[in-house]
Amino acid sequence: MLRLAVLASGGGTNLQAIIDAAEGGEIDARVVVVISNNSTAGALERARRHHIKALHLSSRQFAGGEEFDRALLEILKERQVDLIILAGYMKLLSPTVVQAYRHRILNIHPALLPAFGGAGMYGIRVHRAVIASGARYSGVTVHLVDEQYDHGPIVAQRVVPVEDDDTPESLARKVLAQEHQIFKEVIQLFARGRVRVEGRRVRLLPRS
Ligand code: GRF
Image (cartoon, rainbow, N blue to C red):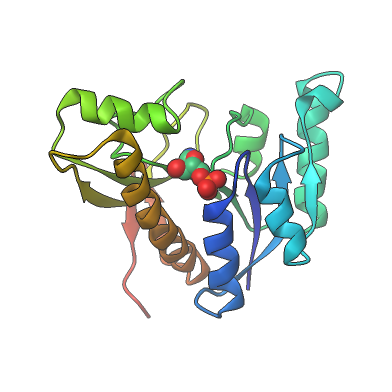
């Protein structure tokens, strides 16, 4: 069983999809802690509903970034976390945390990276930018986290066509539905030890 920590700032529909997949036996993983920088995040509420440890952890509670990192790493260690899942987590993890869990942190982004990513590209802004660009395809990217926003090696992507009558909101809905699907598939790849990172490229090993 892979032990997951999910970090989320918002409503937590991706978290919910992961919890449901874990409880339904679709993935060999279990969410052992949910952490949010936002005390009112729906994600924390969802965790509590499933009797999963839910923690509000914000850098504002600490004197500095180092103290925050220490507290976060302590929780992850105590819970014996194997994989960290960023599911709508709006904060950049520090190099200390990234290094401690190198290639064991996943982020989901609601577009096809490396396009439409980076600082300030989140939520509905991403879908607005995609539509404004005239792109015919958008989608979802799950990638490993490195020290920059939306930058680490790509593990999986799914394409969502942009229709002529799509609005940022309608596109967001279609992309989100794919997010819920792809995240659990990627987690299962990790659970099965099928992910190998070779520089910027990720190789998915065949089923054994
Ligand atoms: C998703 O669109 C995700 O790609 C982005 O933040 C959103 C989170 O949605 N990083 P939810 O909180 O999981 O519903």
